[in-house]
Image (cartoon, rainbow, N blue to C red):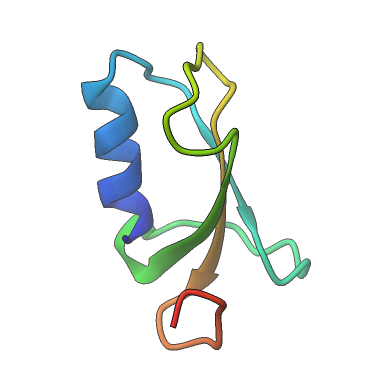
Length: 68
């Protein structure tokens, strides 16, 4: 799922503040959210969250990742 769609899903659950980070460790900023793919999340799927709890690990479209 791209970062924008993941953020939209979090918003639909009633949470409006989430964080994202570059999963490569390079510290790149996610400016165009649709250009990034979520490869991991914390906490895991189905875990109740509050504002700021969701952390999405992302890589740019086309970069190698564990999601296939």
